[in-house]
Image (cartoon, rainbow, N blue to C red; front, side, top):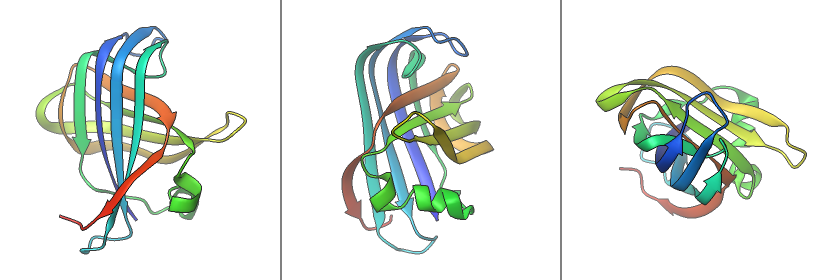
Length: 150
């Protein structure tokens, strides 16, 4: 399975501390079964006007990862449409960047009682980003659409 994350945020958060004010954050998570021209599923997460560290960035952040390979069977199962849709996630892209660079990506699926299971925990992933530290969002997954791969 392949996954790509695009995340943006506007607010004032202090990295590594649970302190911050989020004006608006949004994230697209794209999944596809392989490298071919298979249809891509597009999911979205949005968070508006929140206080705390769940969704934050340092002033402004925007990042898009390369397509990442997910090999773990348990992670693939978490990212399947019927399991993923409606669940809560915590997504973070770390790394100072003003253009193309490398960063760290985490995507955790949170169950109904608050337990988090990592489906993506990758380091030194190619990102195209404009952020001072990290951009993070926590919220509920919504289906956007299925489209042809580009």
